[in-house]
Length: 74
Image (cartoon, rainbow, N blue to C red; front, side, top):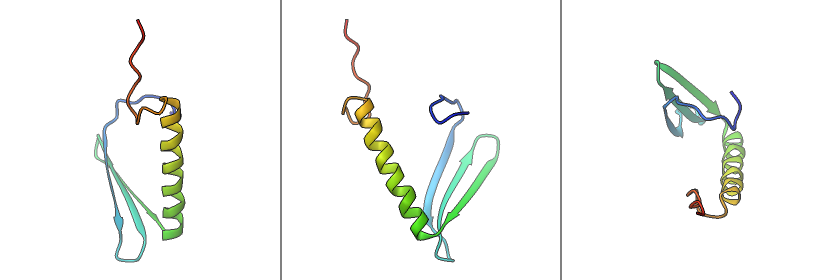
């Protein structure tokens, strides 16, 4: 599956620090899938920057409507 493909898979995501000073992104998906992903703080900051850049790009694609779809012209 590519990054731009729709999916019917539902998942929950949690983000927080671990006891070992890592940042954990924990994903729990349908079908009993549990995926803990641990990153050092510098990697976590890079991921955060990528998320912000993707949000900005998505806003530009949507025409600056803060994630809301543009109404269709009739």
